[in-house]
Length: 148
Image (cartoon, rainbow, N blue to C red; front, side, top):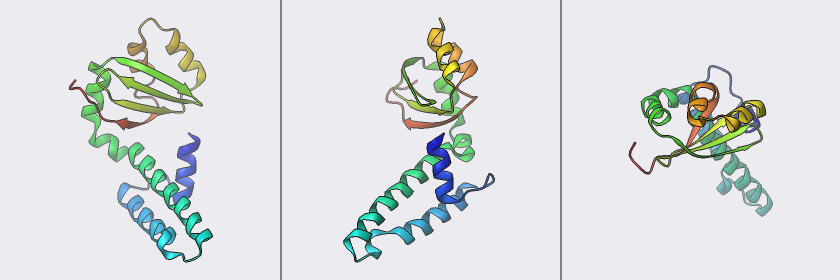
């Protein structure tokens, strides 16, 4: 969640910012912080770091946007319904789930108690479908490598 909040703060986003507006803000920030604009080596190094953080934040915000989720909802539903969980990791309220088809998703803001309940569940995939997959902000990290 911290990563999402910092990314939204970097772009000064409001709740109703759409992807087109986000793209415009992104382009303006990249123009402002492009390393080629700076002659001084220290400023150029700072601009490189800042532009990389802008790129990372943009990619995160696009991947969690409702428009992206709507465009990929059919594929996501198919994955969470038909592909079991092969692995999962939890760190700092972020749950990273690897599905049997090779897809990886991150779920943000998952409380430790929900993770503990999932961990002790006899049917992990069913628990995740009911309590995690459509309840928390998520993003696709990697596409599937095996057809579902």
